[in-house]
Length: 200
Image (cartoon, rainbow, N blue to C red; front, side):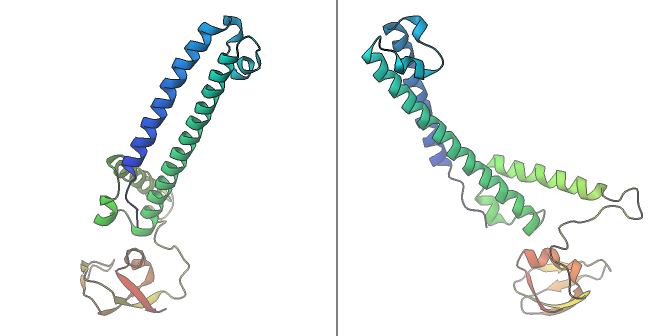
């Protein structure tokens, strides 16, 4: 399950970062006017250790503190975005190429685009596997765990509708019905929570 995006919180953090940056720019320019231009360098430690101006040292300490806060906010936002992107990639492997509506509603437009792009890259890669050999492509998401047997009985947990296995005989998956199919054809339905395996 994908948790709702924290868009308002991200906007607040970005606004705070902009305020901190603007204040640092003002203070840095003010420091440049108070002390000799030779003492103002990109390394704030030089300014802080200079005995030319106590006021400039105080302002330089403020600049350094705000810069540290900017770095912390940036690291937190990057960790948040990295975690969400990792979850989006996991959704592709767990739930397949079509996201449930509940997950889609909890994602931003950019995240949905990322899912679509990742899905295309993965599909192209799986299609290209074995092209030179005896078969065209390999679905890497089918066998997440090794099967104990080839055929399985499974129970349908929720209404799904028509499902077409490889033999072309359409079966209707109704809640509480039991069916018998090769396990590899059931993998996506298992990950989506539509069916559960009864015996292997």
